[in-house]
Length: 173
Image (cartoon, rainbow, N blue to C red):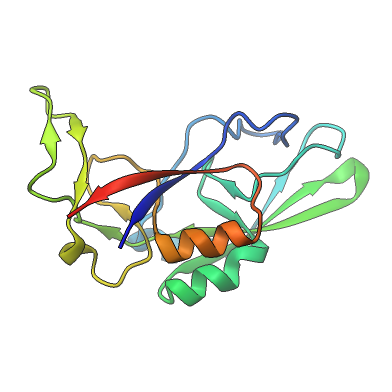
């Protein structure tokens, strides 16, 4: 099976902006251990005119998908934790529902991954056996923190014509 990193397209023109943080800035990755500390829902306020383009996948400040993808994600990865996030443009009375997803972190890096002398990754290779039946996950440890999706899940997302999502194939053995 083929796998892809999924990332927010930071180059989306005329994109939404939040009042309290930069959607292209730093991000926080929550783990399964953090789930008990999270509220059931969160509200974020948007700046701008209210006519900006909205991403279907955001990585900053936390990983969020547009609510319309929730059923698809849950079908492929039933153990996902979802937190409701509502983005509100107060001046125009607009609300946009998102779900913050907390993903499983897997040690799925193959022994054939190549590293530079300073221990950074030169060529990342995933081990198919370590991935198992997962379709959406993060790599454990100090590896890249973009989520990884399987080809069937990527195709399901692409059929919905998402805005602001980039895919980059990852080598698998």
